[in-house]
Image (cartoon, rainbow, N blue to C red; front, side, top):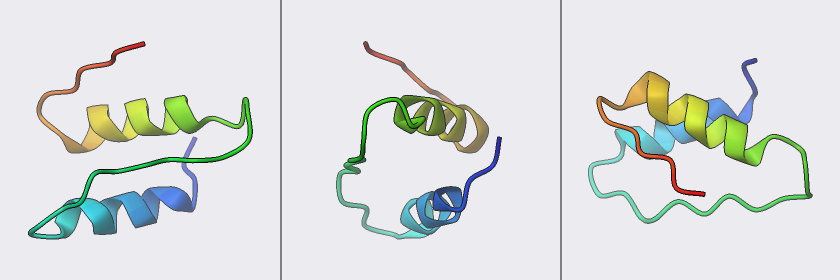
Length: 50
């Protein structure tokens, strides 16, 4: 499932100096899914802490 916000995450990742990422939004809209999928697809290592 690809979302428009993923483009914003790619831009965030491409910045030389990245600030911490904060994802805010309503409950049960896919925030955790989005971040986990992005991490697995765009980083060599991805750790999920729940």
